[in-house]
Length: 132
Image (tube, rainbow, N blue to C red; front, side, top):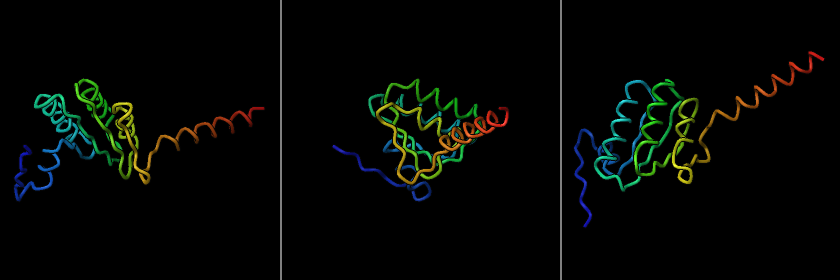
């Protein structure tokens, strides 16, 4: 029997997303504690249901991101990570931190790590070229 979700007029969609186990938010110092708490709460509530982390973030604090990553690795259920929009810096680290077969970046998601690797290689090659 499915339970009917009652929507609070003030919280509305936010509560609905939490009730179907979707965690979301910008990666910042305040929201990271809420995300860590929600992952832990959902694990305690029912450790058999998978969790979903929708990521649309330009990044944030390394310490906050590593805290979220550690909690993702510590919980029993699989954590699906989905990249939407901008997934850069620490947010890209969280995207690849999901369960190996349950990570996805949507076609128009912008991921930053590829750009920086190419630029560093190009700079190193230019530097070596000028030395010779």
